[in-house]
Amino acid sequence: MTSAIKSLCQTLNLEENSLNVHESAFRFKAHADFIAQIEPNNPNDPLLKQILPVQLETHIHPDYKYDPVGDLQKNPTPSLIHKYHGRVLLMASPKCDIHCRYCFRRHFPYEQQINQRHWQAALDIIQADSSIHEVILSGGDPFSLSESALVNLIEKIEAIEHIQTLRIHTRTPIVAPSKSPQTTFLGWAKSSRLNKMMVVHCNHANELSEKTAGLLTLYRDTGFHLLNQSVLLKGVNDDTQSLENLSHALFKQGVLPYYLHQLDRVQGASHFEVSDDIAQTLHETLRKSLPGYLVPKLVREIAGEPYKTPL
Ligand SMILES: *Cc1c(COP(=O)(O)O)cnc(C)c1O
Ligand code: SF4
Image (cartoon, rainbow, N blue to C red; front, side, top):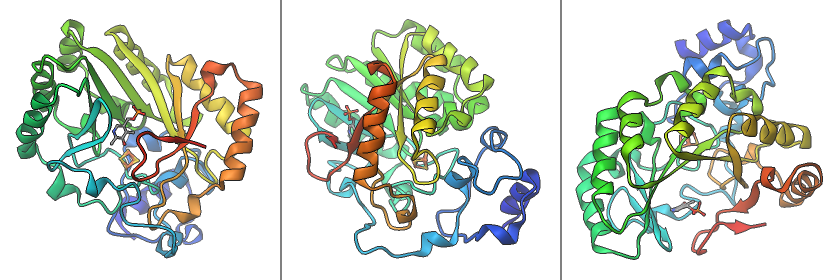
């Protein structure tokens, strides 16, 4: 076992042998901010389950794939994915501050595909296609770039006249708020002509803290609309109470729920799957117990579909 996992167990007062740890090429990674939100002495903690590499990941499931959402077929140039009308996704960084065990990109050839040397080719394609109005920075996590590299990229996007909206898909403000971009980035945001959208990724209310609240307020105050996407995960948030608490906790920090994703069927994540029947029942219960604006859209990504498919 690596020393990082040993020290995690020590911090959380957990018995290493009881956890069925199994390391893989998609290695263990979590920032101290996230670890601080895990409850000690609880091997079933919903945050711990998202980061601990376990034996179950070695289970090969016949319906699970290595590229479940067809991303590898939709790259006009490395780092750019143009799957939906009017918006493109630019993978700005191969890194994340956390390795979520269920991640659909766990087998994606990150390092070859995502590299700053591909940005210019991607920007040229965006410049040449005036049907594109929105650029989505994703990854990995775009907030794992240095602030100067991030702002440099954003300014190039802003210079393309037909781009109206910049959207950032990031988990950093939730899982590593203390290293999320601030000064330079906020300076840019204050004076930008673009519509600004930030979609964070939070699966459980326990991931939110005073640190995330402070940071999200800063982003909101500079004009970002804040939305959240989460993944429905067995043993993490597959019960009504967890999902209700999540919506309320997000709203308290100025974030509206956007998508609740059914898991992408990526090899190694089948133990997180929640059946469509249970997902729909949970979603129906949320509709009854929450105001409409706190109910996320329940969707599944199906390769080849023109939008994320509602269940
Ligand atoms: C999810 C996704 C988008 C954004 O879809 P919205 O429904 O607008 O949130 C865009 N491009 C790709 C490749 C995506 O996977
Ligand atoms: S933050 Fe997103 S891209 Fe990064 S490992 Fe987690 S799910 Fe995957």
